[in-house]
Image (cartoon, rainbow, N blue to C red; front, side, top):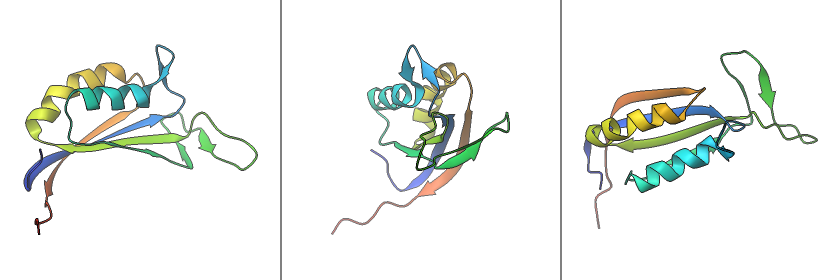
Length: 110
């Protein structure tokens, strides 16, 4: 369980069309993080964006794009991040992993 203090925030940037063994990469990563005991993770789907290839992708009312941006974010201890990072890097063919030091404050229990 996370406690107030120093921690590491990891943000993974993907396309929702990215697949690994016929499964969306983001679902595979979320399942891996869950099984690895990460305290929590959030998947966020963007409405528009572009990546390294500079192709613009956007959701429109009449069409749904398979290449919209996806972010997976989680905050964990440095030790836990160091343990899961090699596997995350293996599972992501195209995308980006951002790792940054942070400080978390847990609410006081009443």
